[in-house]
Structure formats: structure tokens, C-alpha cells
Length: 422
Ligand SMILES: Cc1ncc(COP(=O)(O)O)c(C=O)c1O
Image (cartoon, rainbow, N blue to C red):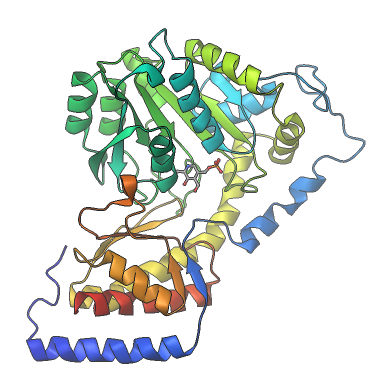
């Protein structure tokens, strides 16, 4: 991070502060109500998907490729055509797919629950162990951390850089401590940094030899087709890397159409080795007789195949890329000249990760709130909501209208300046 206010005199800094306070007061007087807290698609994105609801007219056949009536019970692991579609999206094999309900987080919860209650890979159920630990690359996704916190898992933070998590540290913990049972990963356009794991990082994951036989990489590929450019970097898949090392049981991979079609009304899927799938599907088959196959069929009929789904994402990109530009342009215009803050320049996904000068993130969020701009809470990107540097803030540009986003970002930058000069 650049030195804040490098080369400026105390008087100059005082004048910068006073200008920021004046501008901030003017915004406060406007009594705005702007929200940059959660990474939700905006209404224009949701409008794109309305024809999905007509993709299944009353007279269309409800029979799946394998001859199952999607209106009825059964086919616990999902219909064949949905397996093919998601396998293609992930670079996986259709027979290593499980198609679930409306949420990938639900599937992650289920995987943890099964490991805790019944145990996996013939190992002791985790609830019988004195300690279960998970590695948590930071900054990370708050709901991942909420899941492991809910199950009483001890979370160990792992720093990340532009290539992904610090793999020397991951290796050290995973290979030396049997209580370390897993790691959270968002390999493509990570939440919130937007980084894409390098091929070396993916290979290092595939080469891990964890002390615990039931160690699993929770590979959450939520943003694998959410590009913000028309020349996306091709990431090595965990499937390819693990096929090379033979370490095929080590990962659980998740994906959903939450941000392709409708959050909460999309389709979620899960990919892992057949042996893992067998034990997980057995448990999920107790939980439900089957997920929503009509929705699976509707999605497959709407998109046709993975290539069409990828092309469809261009429409989302056309809406979202200008919003990310607003965020990045405002940050660099307002903060770069002052040497304040550091931020990522994501090529996809839903977030920009911003590091405020140490010790000021909470204050920035509070100042924004008092001027009518809601942000994700400071600390949310760390396990137990504790950012030791009180620095990281997740910016979610997708939901607000461009003009609202511009205002929100101007207030955000003022808040950074005010907090840095207190
Ligand atoms: C990394 C990541 N995984 C999962 C989800 C939620 O996915 P779903 O709606 O499929 O539960 C999100 C939503 O923001 C996310 O950012």
C-alpha cells in the first residue's frame, strides 16, 4: 500500500480533511439510502431471465432424457441432461455430478453435516473429535465462515495473494495436523478479491497429502462463468489437476445458477469422485426423495447447453462491467493521488476487495452508514468477523443503479479520507 499522504505537509493534510468533511456533510444533508452490502444481481439482470419461466409451456414434455417424469418423485441425484450441462460448465464428468436444489450453500452445509454426523471415507464422525479445524483463505466469503462457525469448527486464516492462498502454509497445516479437515476455496473470481487461482496453486492443491484421510477441499466455483471481460483467463480445473495426481477424492466442487438466472430459484450442483458421491447421495437421499426436477428441466431447456449458458453471461457482463468501471475509476481518481488504500481489479465475479489504511475499516463503514450508504460490515471477510488489521472492506457494485453507485463511491472515498485523517 502506498504511504498515505506521502510528501504532504500537515497543513495540506488538514485542508484535504476539511474539504472532505464539507463534501461529506453536503451528502449527509441529502438523506440518501444506498446499498452496496450484498452481492445481489440487480433488477435488470433478473429481467434477463424472465423468459426462463416460459421455457416450459404446458404442452412440453416433462420427460427427461433418461425417461423419468420430472413432475414426479425420484431421481435423487438429478436428471441426466442437467448433469451434462453442469459437468460441461465445470470441466467434470457427468457421472461425477449431483444436481441439488436452489442453493449451493445448502449442499455445502449438507456435506459438513454428513461429515459431522456420520463421518466420511470410513473415518470417525467429526462430532466425536475433540477438535475440527478448517483453513480459511482471507479475505474470504462470510457465509463460508458462518457455516464452519455454526458447526463449531476452529478456523485458521490463510493469507492470499494474486495467485491464491499461501500454499506453503496450506500444505504445512493440512499435512501435519489430522484435526485439519478442510479448506474453503473460491478458485475463480474469489469472493471478495476477484482473483483467479494460478495453475501452480491448483496443482499444489491437487498434490496435497493431508494427514486426515477425510480432508476435503470445498472448491466453491460460484463465479466460474461470471466474466467481466471478453478475453477471460482460462483457469486450470481442479478436475484436470487431480486427475494428474490421482488425488481424486480430495475435493468437493460446487456451483449454481444463482447469479445466472435467479438467486434462490436457480439450480445448484455438486461434483466429486464417485466414491464420495455414493456416500453423500446416500445421506441426501434420506433428507429428500428428490430435488426440483422441473426446475432442472426448465433450466436445461432454456439454455440448451453449456455454450449457450456461457454466451448468455455476456448479457450480464454488459450490465455489470460498467458498474465495476465506476468503482475502479472513482477509487483511482479520488484515492490514488492521496496514497490511500489498495484495491483489486477483478476480471470477473461480484466484488472489489478494498484495503483501507490499517485500523480504519470499521470507521469507514460507520461513516458511510451515517451518510446513507450501507456496506458489508468491516471484518466480515475474516473468520469470526475479526480482521486483525481492521482494513478490508468488500465492495459490491452489482445491485445499485450506476448513478447511485457513483454517489455511493464518492461518499465511500470521502469516508476513507476522513477516517485516515482522524
Ligand atoms: C462464493 C459464493 N458461493 C456461494 C454463494 C451462494 O450460492 P447459492 O445461492 O448457490 O447458495 C455466493 C453468493 O454470494 C458466493 O459468493
